[in-house]
Amino acid sequence: MPDPRVLRTQLHVLTTARRLLVERSGEPLNFTILAKEAQVSRRTLYTHWGTIERVISASVTTLDAVVLPDQSDLTPRERLSGFLYTVRDSLADPVTAVALASLVGQAPQDHNAADSLGETVDARIAQFRERVAPISTEQFEAVVGPIYFAEFVMRASASDELLDTLVARGVDLLNLEPALV
Image 1: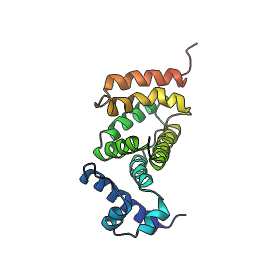
Image 2: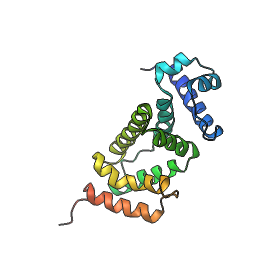
Image 3: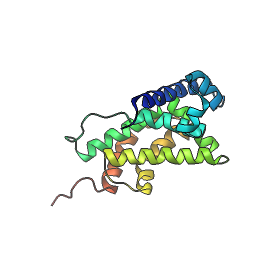
Image 4: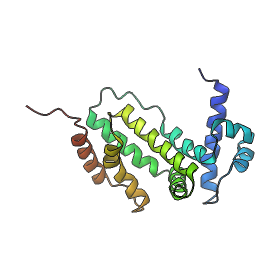
């Protein structure tokens, strides 16, 4: 079992990173600034995350990994719908939007950012598999990708109508509802 003190420190660092991402208004975050603000050593940051990009990625995925209420009584369609709405709502969070935009912008030139962005995507796919159903990367792109497109390319939150369309697409693509005989 992980040491509760380590978990508290990690959560404190990630919370501090989230606050700094918003406060710094586009200025890059680095380990020196984060260590000073979180009142931890740079060594602690390197030990737990290795790169600032991993801290940024973890600050997004850790918040999104909050335990959800029991969903065993929900239909697969309802679980899919809930997941898609959660993704949309998490992208409305300014910290999440800044963190992901930062990683997306840096990824073409910075392998650490690209790796962290990949880890963020992998974490979201794992959440989908845990909460909804098995899914391939390509299926995830088809069902969840349009939400990210709306947010980061179109610069608008995905509409309820789009989410309803994506739920229908996901139900068909993932065969979530048994065929009527």
